[in-house]
Image (tube, rainbow, N blue to C red; front, side):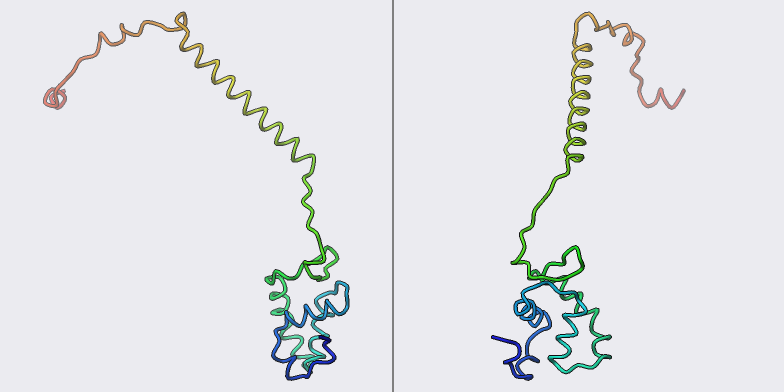
Length: 144
């Protein structure tokens, strides 16, 4: 259904985002916010002051509607026309590898420390330290 074939009353029943979708489908190319909203204002017979007062809300509605995609050149297009590629930079992979290597080295160092403590040659006789300990009651503590 073409926008030109719709009556003004029918156009007024549609949301700005629905009109945007129809405009993008008819034009078959991406468009910037200003151009899209100017076309909507022309279709609905809105004044320049209406344009100025509503353009911000229109932009917000485009950003929250999942049908649209803001391209790098600041133009809007239908998300269905684009494939999203996720690119992982090599720098990120190298940093992850370095972080993993550091974690492994820390774990190995910690395990070596534990092995040294558990080694029978490394254990010292701590029983002499306990000979000087004395158990005191609360009354004896208060007196001292």
